[in-house]
Amino acid sequence: MLAFQRGDARAFELLVRRHRGAVFQFLLRSVGERGRAEDLLQETWLKVVRGAAAWEPKARFTTWVYTMARNLCVDESRRATHRRAAPGAPGGDGAEEGPPLSERARDEGAAPDRAVHNVRLRPLLERALAGLPPEQREVFILREYSGVPFKDISEVTGVPEPTVKSRMRYALEGLRAQLAALGVDGDMAGDARRVNG
Image (cartoon, rainbow, N blue to C red; front, side):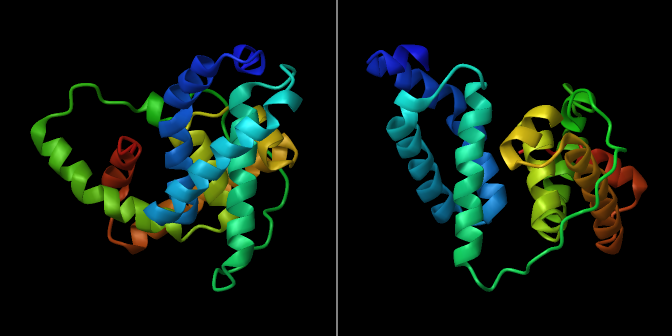
């Protein structure tokens, strides 16, 4: 980013290549519509270009770009009046720090039958994820799909870290309950952690 600030256009291309996929996945899972997520991704990169001069290295670039993407999602949500409003989760700790579940549960050599099982489980997981309140879904997506640490999620969302951890805990509880309601038992729900994209 510092190189881009100095006028190196190739540095911007490198930033886009490095972060585009993860930011797009965050946007897609946040808005739930591919076309709109692509539009928001373009808006995010435009904001990076327009705000480059103001960026300071005191914050990580990823925190900064996710903050912009998140703000665009919030604006999108406000425009979409049909979306349900969700109350903020109460503060409190309880979510575990460390690598995201997807990294802790990664199965490098999944058997073919496991891969087929995961393909069938993915839509159920996405459906359960869509059923979470927006604040919980946002924290879950940033943490589990993008691997953003709780401290950085706190900066991105503008809420204290204990609240972020609480939202994560409620998201996990909500996902377990919704997956159970969809007929996914405990063993299959554990496999949901391997479905990462």
